[in-house]
Picture 1: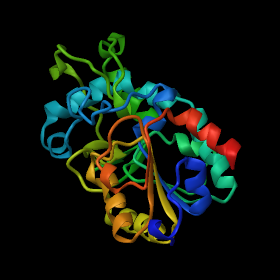
Picture 2: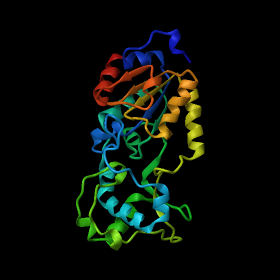
Picture 3: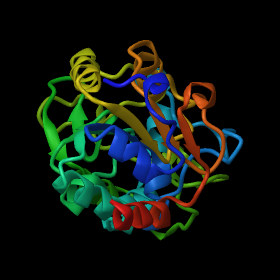
Length: 278
């Protein structure tokens, strides 16, 4: 691993990649906005809307689950039907060049895999499957979505603006009549197989990602403000291990003072231009 004080400081993403050819890439919501999936924060790192559902509230309160699954009837199809954008495909090309040692995404949309990326860790899980919190059984999200729609025909006629991660900005509705789907095997609570706010990323997933980071030449953050610690931790560790960090993100990040290179530019055009320079 090259410390930044031993090489010329990069002024472009292409230079950063050339100097640090085995990259650990961390992506966030900003890489999927071109696919029609909303992001959480503005350019200052502040919430654009109310904070997402908290894990403890979801598990403890039936009313919270009613609200979540009702809004999901509108929000989930946006995630399900989204297609990878040019930025996702650019990272596939970068992987095929041998420049990606590991790709870790904070997104749960599986668009990296849809585009063809192979070395992907879904840090926060995947929204296309649902886990029973009682017996652990996994089910396809579409199956639970259909069950929920059949049980709640009134809610299928409502409209709202899509929100991140399969949510929707559905407000001023009586959710108390919503029938929440439960596990058909044990009657347990069903929850998308994602890490909700207030919950912890599985330890083995974090350790696996950190091991890959330690083996990498550089850390490239794409489309993340890093305001959530689960992503920011990789920047902290990279800094401790003298691994240079570049961020391609429109707006501030939590790691701005740790960066070797900051690119406050549109993601897809920057990646396309970079590939042409390599």
